[in-house]
Image 1 (spheres, one colour):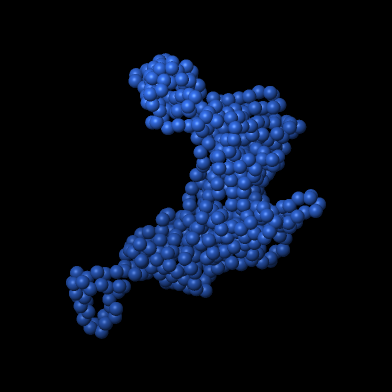
Image 2: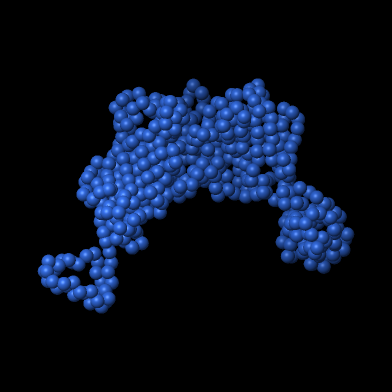
Amino acid sequence: MVGGGIINLNIGATLYGRALTTSGAINLDAINATITQNVWNGSASADWNTAANWSPGIVPSCSLAINAIIPAGATPCPVISDTGNYADNLTIQNGATLTINPGKDLTVCGCTEMNGSDALILKSDNTGTASFIDNGISGTGTAKVERYLSQNAWHYTCFPITTTQTNPLQGIYVIYYSEPAHHFHYIISLDSTLDQTMLGYGIWSDGSNATVNFSGTLNTGSLSIPVSRTYDISTSDYDGWNLVGNPYPSAVDLSLLTGSWTNVEATAWCWDPVAGVYKVYPSGGGGSHTKYIPPEQGFFVHNYTGSSGTVIMNHGARVHKGEDFLKASDDPANLLKIMASGTINSYYDELSVYFNDSRKQDYEPGYDAWKYSGLAEAPQIYTLVNNKKVSVNALPFSQKNITVPMGFSTSIPGNYTLVATNIGSFDATIKISLEDLKLSTTQDLKLYPSYTFTYDTLDNANRFVLHFNNPSFGIAERNIDHAIQIYSNEDHLYIKSLDGNPLKGFGILYDLPGKELFRYQLANTMLNRFTPGVMEGYYFVRIVTDAGIYNGKVYLR
C-alpha cells in the first residue's frame, strides 16, 4: 500500500505486505498484519535461519506463506546450514546466490525463480549432499550441483540438470550400461553431451578424492525413461538390466513410485562401493537397501517381460532424507538375514529369506530379488529359486521342514564368517539351522548365530543349506481365550481348560531366544500345574493337543 498522505488502519483491518506513504503519518489500531515476503539483507551473518538477516525480520516459511527474495546487492549471500528449511516462493536475483551446505535442505512450496549463473549452489562432501525440493522453476538462471567422489571407486550417478557436457568430468572415468550390448561402455569424448534424462552413469576418480560440478537447469516435475530387454544370441539369454537414476537434487521414496512402473520389477539394485556389492530394495520388503534413493543416485532396474518398459519418477515422491540410505527398513515378519564377511578385506554381502503364506515357491518380481554380483574379491552370498541366484527369497511355509540351498563364492580364499540376524522375528518354536555340506556339520543359528569357515576357490559354490523347522505346521492354531488359559504364579506354571474338556497332549517351555527348556505331558485333567525350576524371567509356553495348539507368555520367579 502506497499513499500520498496519512494512512489510517483501524480495528479489524488486514494489511498484506507493507504500508508506505510519501507524507503524513501511518496510524495502526489493532490491525491484522500479514507479511508475505522477506528480503535478504545479510546484516548479521550469512545464516539463512537468523531473523535479523531478513527484512522485516522473519525467517521465510511455508506455513506463514512467507516468500524469500535474495537481492543482488546484499552481502554476504545466504547459506543454509540446517535441515527443515522452507520458503513459500523463492526469488534469486541476477548476481545473488543461495548456498545449501552438504547434508542440509530447503523446500520451496511455491515457485522458484532463478536469475543469473549458478544462482543456487548445492554443496557435497564426504559427509553428504545438499537436498533441494522445488515445486516449479522459472527464470533464466542456472544452478550448480556438486557431487563428491571418494577415490578409486565407482559411483553411480544421475545428472540432476537437463543437459550436461563431459567437460566438468575432465580427469574422471565415465561409463554407461548398454542393455542391448550387455556390458558397460566408456565415454571417451572430451566434449560429449549427456542429455538423456534419468540415464545412470558410473563415474570414477583415480588416485584422489574429487568433487565434480554440474551447472544448468535443474530437473523438475514428473519424468520417465524407457527400459529394454534384448535377446543375446551369443549367450542364448536375455539381459533386461538398465542403469537409470534419480534425476532430482533430493531423495525419492521408491515405495511411492514402483507401483506405476510398467514391465519392470518393482525393485532397485543400488551399488555400494564400501561393501563391493549391490544392495537391493524390493517393494515387498526384506532387502538390504532402504526405500529411499539419494539425490542424483544411479541404480539398476530389471525389465522381465521383453516388452518395452518404463520407469517413472514422480515429483510427489521427492523427500529429504539424512539417514543411512544403505540400511534396510520396513522388514516383514519371519525374516532371516545373513551377512557374509572375511578377514582379507572389508567387503561384505547380505541375503534375506522370509516366509509369508501369500507368496509362491517360484520367483515373484517385487518380492524376490535376483542376485546381481559385485566385485570378484567381495564375498557373494545368495539362495536359489529354481536354480537361479537371488538376494531376497520370499517363500510360503508350505511344509513342516523347509530347506533353502545357499551359495557362497569369492575370488580370494581365506577365513569368512556368516552371521544370522533378525531371528527374533520368528516364532520361538521355529528352529533355524545352517548345514555346511563340505564339512557335514549343522549349527543351530538360534543358539549360535555366527559361523566361521575356511573357503577355497575350488569349493562347491552351493556349499550351504538353510533348514527351517516349524513343529506346529499342519495343526490349526486356536485362540487361547476360547479353550485354554495359560498363566503363572511364583515359580508355578498353570494350564487350565476353559471349555470343560480335560487336557490331553503335552506342553513345552522355551526361553526368549527359542531354546526348549522343559517338556511335560498333560495329566488329562481340567487343571495342570508344573514347576519348571528355571531362573526368574519371561518364557514362552506352547500347548499341543489333539484339538489344536495354544501359545502363551508367562513370568516365572
